[in-house]
Image (cartoon, rainbow, N blue to C red; front, side, top):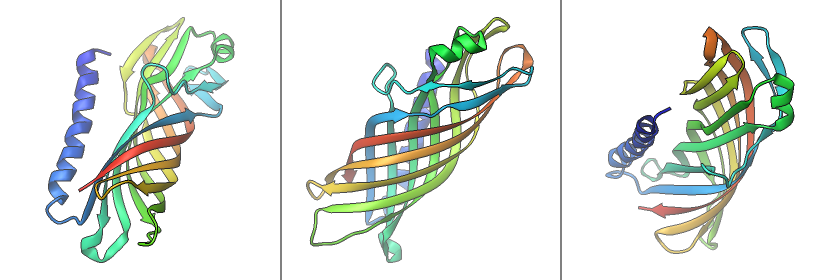
Length: 224
């Protein structure tokens, strides 16, 4: 897909985060913006194509390869509603998966990836375990959203190279936030996702697979 579309996707994500910030900053006691990276993997998953092709894909994450694995989110802690431990977040994650060499050989395909990427946008509920006597705060979260993968398939029947709407994504996370200053904190977390991917590919066919990811994230947050 063109660089213009990639730029548009990035712009859309930026606009979404800015809109949420603008909408809630006037009343929120604790709005925070976070960015993170880390190490992401994905276990094998079954792949079914509408032409009858079926195989099990072995996935590689290649978290630090270009384009890298990363994410960003805006969290609104519900201070104004007397629920300071509860929060709502909008989370964008640039997951990615590459079919390994054995998978390509088995399928007879030369290229099969969701690497620009398996893009996830979720709305999540969060709960944090605050204690004024300590600087660190554990938290848990879960949510639902959508995945918009960049589908990259090259096979004898044709080539697919496009952003598509994949389907529903579920997300769960658990981590610890460490307060550095009144405005800044760092965090380490585990994040797991499940994405149901059903996308069109070449020759009028559709490709279906369910992708699980596991990630250990390290990030930084700014608190308004």
